[in-house]
Image 1 (cartoon, helix red, strand yellow):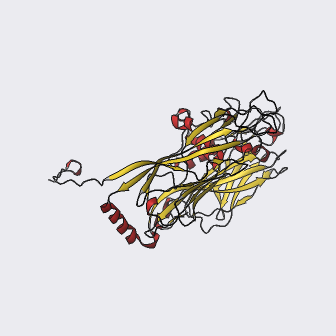
Image 2 (cartoon, one colour; image 1 turned 90 degrees about the horizontal axis):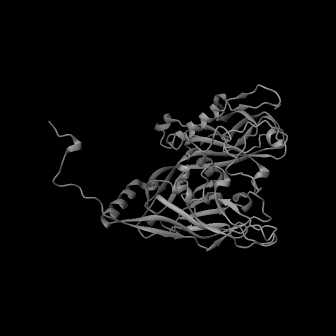
Image 3 (cartoon, rainbow, N blue to C red; image 1 turned 30 degrees about the vertical axis):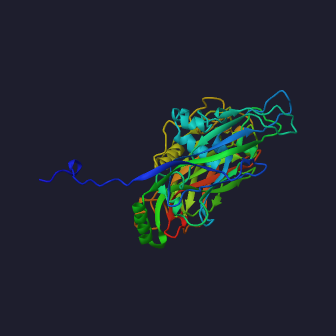
Length: 466
């Protein structure tokens, strides 16, 4: 009778591969950045020859100085901000200058992910606190940085804070060792485009001038170096892999935008073109255009619902789902009774989408009812008078979602588990609006979560397949 595998012993155990690990600090090319000056932060990952980078615990840090000014020399223009607020676009650049990964409107996406993946306890964790993020989902709950006691025509340095956060993307949010020291050409680079101050900073009272600067940008990660025997074996494996090289799979997000003009109501047909090979789910958010550059509005952490009552998507010529997702029907007249409140279907779609990657938290920062002053509720069915209530511009955590996961695609070598949209024409988002958009157009952002294959080859190339 054979000994079970889990209690077998050997007098000649296989020795582990020896390796050395070193914490590396990669610094940005320039010392100071600001949205009204040099707003493109470049961080070269200049690692040692034949080394690997462990991105699983990597973080980025930066010193943020509030340069907002009030008209009075007495008041200070105190702002609330988190590190993620400052990142408009995140790009990973390969050794040949190629774009490996690009995530547009990263700050809005990051807020959506936080709303549904962070619970009340997680939001109070050290990781969230160090990033300056809110513990209750409101912009006012972010780290507060004092402004300068300057007149309205001058920018002066006020208070500052050094914040730390993880970057969410396929390349840097994985648990694989990436052979950055084997790449040929330039060093792999992280590129961050800073957001406008009016968008990134939140104020309880609007300042005369909103401004900030960023200094001392550092990216920290572990560098791993193996012995020469392992390196030789790794090179042989790369050579055997051929021109396609070795790869790992991560999750990235492709982005597109639409606008709903003032005066529009009823069903909207919003077309956008995103064509990944393995689409997992779609997120669509609504924001008031004028709020995006208004310093007292929560355009990042608080979206709006545009009085959306139901929605569907048209994907590859088919309506998905077959029956519209009913969101809510608010009372057209606050003085009358009746109406329908059915946000459970819409919220279930969000749970399904995030549940694919086990990133959903059922105790999220999006609440059913307004608990505090601000945008913490999932869907605002406010029926009070005023244009903001009438056109669904009251801030909330609302997001439309639909799952596209297709496990039958496993037989296709070019598709992983999502729906193959590589040959699809324009996609269509069809929200049904109860009331007309009244005072400002509403911007609609779409993100498709998709599998991203990061490939590296024996000739030192790094590229992605989405």
